[in-house]
Length: 181
Image 1 (spheres, one colour):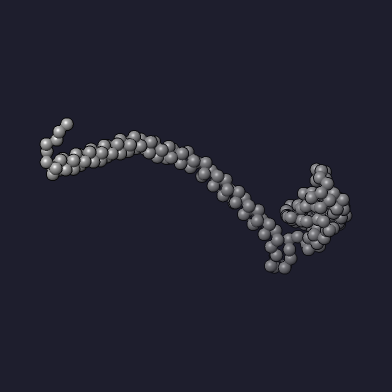
Image 2 (tube, helix red, strand yellow; image 1 turned 90 degrees about the vertical axis):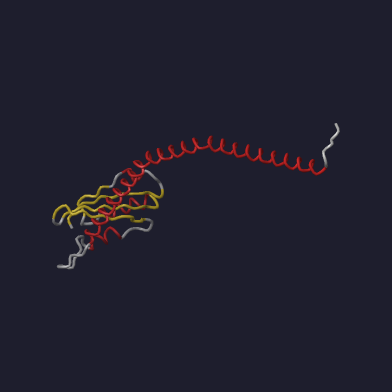
């Protein structure tokens, strides 16, 4: 095919054609971006709604766990307060509520006995109960320690559960002793 147009007009027509193609490409890209965004928005809103539902469902669980922790903390604080009161020195008489001889009788122990806790409850004036919890390295050492506690003159009754002797080594034990102190 013969082309009788001058070179300048051909060049101008090619430039206008390229401009129209670029404009159409940009316009189509913009329309595709709008379509993409319009398809993406519902999923965004749906995920926001699901997140809010999950947070609202989790709030009671989180608040109940916090309440459980705070209740446990309150119980622990009351126990510590009770133990501190039981060890508090009477300033008028400068004496402990539990005689030092009784404390020494329990704390003097064979090698291999570790005492983790010692609690004292005063039932009436002069009588009370003493709970000793700890760990023994072997069964023989634990039996010797229990016999030593039973032989003390302060204790009228020493309870030692037989289940404490179930293990051979590293035995957790509890001794409940009542007596007049």
